[in-house]
Length: 348
Image (tube, rainbow, N blue to C red):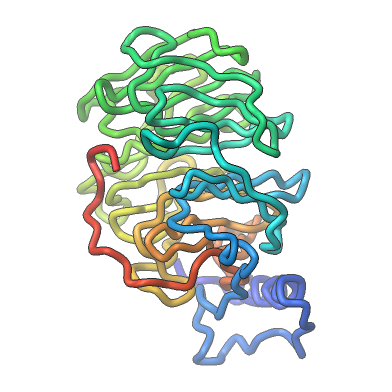
């Protein structure tokens, strides 16, 4: 989808203001919309050097707390990095245990707590924003309330928790706020209501659950009671085709925003599955991606965990059209030689 002229103007103005906030330098004026150095969808980012210097590498997932002005980035070094909305590093803390492996998912609870899918420890952690463990739910197993490799967690409007897992089983579970098992559904397969590596979750205000069903190359939408409602994308779905969607977030008007790991891009769909926009493609330049794992939306920004490029990129997101403006910031390490990674279907 090509940006509309009005959208480009809005996005450029927003980009100018945010670059000022991130760098401390006031721009002389809005960027020139016709400048060849800044094609639609891309611009030079302001690097979040504080997070880079702190050692952030291969960000796997990102969660945003717009109300409190914080962004939480989960790295593959077993730490959570907390930045403000302009990329300044506020703090970082290690996760409790990482000798077996690092977590894959992080999400925000409505009270400001962090929810972590502690993959290799077969549990869900509830942490304070500074890393103190408030609760741990689950243990290794196949029964209700037990997990093999939990990949993602999301809080529903009623405070219950949805958890995706793979390994011994590809399924979803719903837990009460205090961790009691409520629902268990799914199983490995391509049929509606079955999953192959469910790897990202988002819950809408009406309780609908969006599941990034990565190895089925689709997003499945479930009702609050877990019943199948519809699918978005697919491996052979024309313009709506997807390649290993690893994470899902919901836009300001209910748009479905995906980190498409297999195509190194971000896709946007309407809630009923119509393709709306595509951003990026393989590469190391600003606005391009290398196997992105995570997406989040906050305060008019789309945040992308650009995993293979060892950075987070932030884009202006127009709330009315759900089009993309210009890259306005990035954090993490400078682009490196990205491995020629194939989409992962087994534990990383």
